Image (cartoon, rainbow, N blue to C red; front, side, top):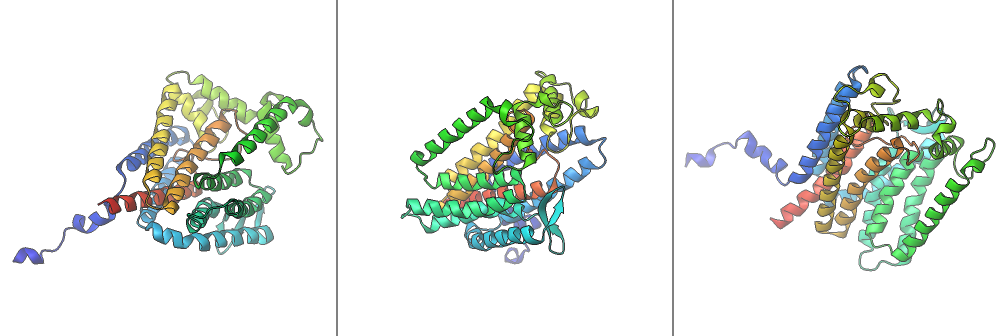
Length: 384
């Protein structure tokens, strides 16, 4: 009789909060977090308080992930339109009243200084997943055109700031949703063909179009410089090409097994610029070599594969589209960062997930992966 009045233990009270978390996703996150902490300790131990700050940012991101994972997908769907509208209005306010630093107007003071474009990394896939959910079963070409317009408005505002890196991430997150919604390959292949032809023409005519004084449509002067530097960094080895050249030297010098933990000469003699942020993959490659790169790639692929499995098993169109987009957002971050430091993509300031230093990126990743975890939890509870 007395057992009926026993008070539940703390674990019994907390168990429902932790119940349903996807084990493989948690394992992938812990592996990447471990690699990030080890790498930051090595490259940042003589760089002020970067290691401690990175640990704090990582903890903040994990707390955000944990909190968002408790929000059911139905509630996330209700937040899609308000969050998207708020993000676009903040981008308009930034264009009119924003703070300008180094020629870019990306920040807005609303009592505290924020970067509204970061909101769209989450709001964009939410909004498009909501749109396609509402049109489920009656999708037509005009619906995809409207989705393209929903995507184009914030991307255009972000490019106007200018912020090429964030605009590419927001555009990619939206395109993933549109693709998963069933966009026909008959529309995709011509675009890919035009892109391939454009890149080929750019490479062939690089010497002519990269001459001083030649103007490019759409792109700003600094963006034009990044593309031309990518095509041939040796033309300005001590200036614009310095970052790419030193990054590739560090990656190549790591060899098969690397120079060893805290033994990277390119890193600690400060030849690698931004070694704790954009170019941390170069520092990691120098110290851990090809073997370390394979391990890191495996962790990312494990996370992406598991996320796509969650997407394929999600119960509704909204959750399938959202889970797929959030998963491939991680792929975009990793691919762009590794590509730009390896000399195959322009340098656009995209961090390496869980490895690069940066509080904003860590919170954004925590939000995205928290949404993915929420979808995984809802699927498990429905199955049980």
